[in-house]
Amino acid sequence: MGSSKPSKRQSEILQFVAKFQREKDYSPSLGEIAKNFGVSIPTIHQHISYLRKKNLLSADKGKRRSIQAFNDQKRDLVEIPLMGLIAAGGPIEAIRNPEPIEVPRSMLSRGANYYALKVAGTSMIEEGISDGDIVIVREQQIVDDGEKAVAYLPDKDAVTLKKIYREKKRIKLVPANKYMKPFYETNVEVQGKVVGVLRREF
Image (cartoon, rainbow, N blue to C red; front, side, top):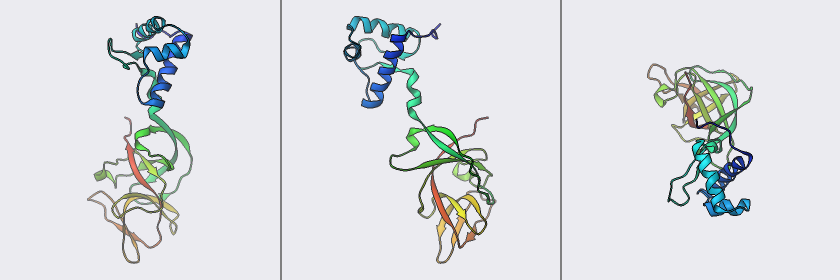
């Protein structure tokens, strides 16, 4: 079927196509691939035909720059540290046990640091964040009122996930669950802003 292993040269062509796409945001032409490997265009065309039959890339006949490498989906994923659990109910103790997790590159912007936390609790369900989901967090110490933030509570040595509102002499931490009430703290350190959610897999 379409899963037979590519030859060494075909693997090299796949890698070249993937790298070209990554760096230029468009696909290479047959001529550009041929030039890179120092072979003729018909030779490259033959390799591309084999790779198409093996379902490792796509290419539309008669259409320029239509070669797409299927095995390059990894380029759309980035590793960030999964730092442990965060409460979306009452605060729980901070857990730091980093392990890498792959997240879509589209969730991240350049020039910032990110980490992930697994959510425990249901206090943010009206924001689309359920128990067992993973939130993607951008490290920053300030968020706007109403934004979802990772908040460290030094007096309790605990971390929680809530919407933050500043009042005169205290911080209001608001759940997104109509059955739960906001609570107030005077000592709150924002550790990051939630920028994305990965749904738990059943």
